[in-house]
Image 1 (tube, rainbow, N blue to C red):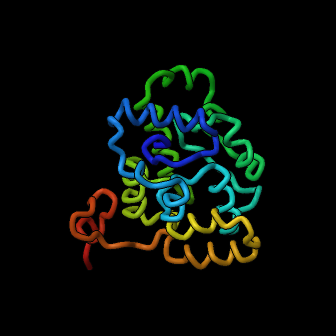
Image 2 (cartoon, one colour):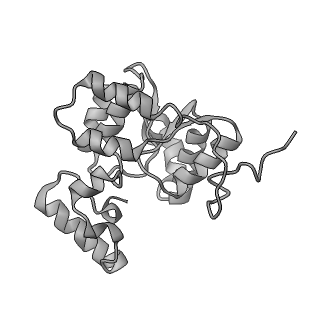
Image 3 (tube, one colour):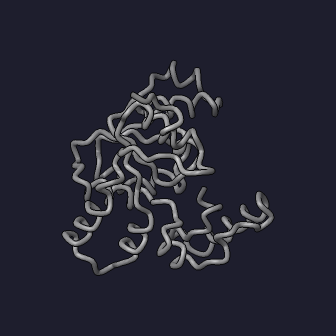
Length: 210
């Protein structure tokens, strides 16, 4: 996801070269976003949200350090160092390894599909779900939770990109913009448009009609 986005994640020249090499190996360099600068990508809302940005988004939406977070991810790009800020903001953050027993972990160790299934199940059963970027799991959960009438926050990437680039914005202004920009992105039913996936947008096709 990080490589395919073609975004800069602050790791310097070495990181840029490593991600460019990865893109070349997997996609022979044919990645649409590669034609844009990092500033352009972020301004267009094309970059995955970083752990720090997720923390700021959640805080702006009213979640505090008493909120329980479950991190549904096989491996966070940048490792523990990258999520330390998010963990400081939300100290009650957990993941598979912190919640499962040694015996339970041994049963799924090395089994990527089972590990993903655990993340999917916990995400499905959570009070609220939010994803740092679109993807297959995100899209499936969006539709599944919509079908079950569960709250899912869909980050307004076009709004957030320019906000995070603005280094002089006051917190009150940032929070006001975030709240207003997400009023209609917190689980409200969205009808499927032509060519959109029925798994992501199950209404009206998969809904009963009175």
